Image (cartoon, rainbow, N blue to C red; front, side):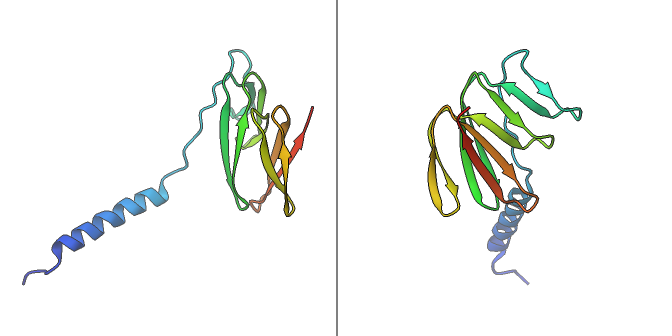
Length: 128
């Protein structure tokens, strides 16, 4: 007995395997390019801070959505012990949501990011 739609079944199986592989792939790791001699690490080996040598754009995903932060070269960038981005000096203006409104955070201000255990993101902007 011949299976009438063998080509369709093979195509569907291949697509399923590809889709499964894509769905369970680990997240990509970002590479941060630091100035020599400026790298500080936590005791677990993860990056704490360094001076970045080129403008670096970071994208963070949380329960609140995806946020993009353009960090300015020749300034420090900070991470927590788990490797999560914490803060940097902005290379360009961005808008951040505070409550139900959007506020401008200008270039050369510091952006501070924290993510709760529930995945909610909190963003603050300050000048110093």
